[in-house]
Image (cartoon, rainbow, N blue to C red):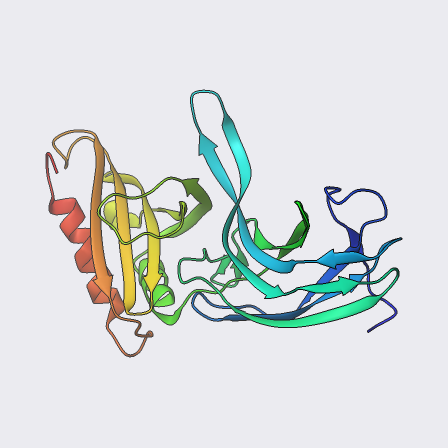
Length: 264
């Protein structure tokens, strides 16, 4: 174990003198449905602790709007046990290597080579007796799958410009969504659609069999009969740019949204 480890105190649920942890993630980005690799390093406290379980939980900073609250909260998803049970002696150093699956619906944190400002990572938890103690979030970078990249690249080629991305609490009706939140990628329309829509929002729901793409366009008056939103859903296989004519396909999706007038 490196002498340069920066052990972090947990959040205090185990009391004074509790163990400390330092979770080291393998360098580089991961993909939805891929594998996250690393090691959990532990340093024993001022007494022995019987560790029942060591877990890693993915977490994202999610926008939440209720009657009583509006802001961002850290929301955990997909907790995985990576070790236990064992006794961690006073001052003992111990390491647990891990390889865990990245959930298919994990949001992407960068596209077009730029960071999206999405707060995403993993938290390390130790369970001891009747207490569970969690560490700070260790950030991870998540790149788009080839199919996601195909859709995003097509939108860029059609003139759409990235505006913002965030994580929204809630579920999208009629989809296969598994997580308690979803990612929205907001894009300003290309020249041919200016005056037709203010923006388009893209949500990806990936699974082992393919990719569900949810497009939501914010309608303006004029071409559309009334204001509101138009939502379209498409399911595509995991095919990369070059294997599929994503530009023509996505252009067809956008045109279908523009042609869809009135109620939906």
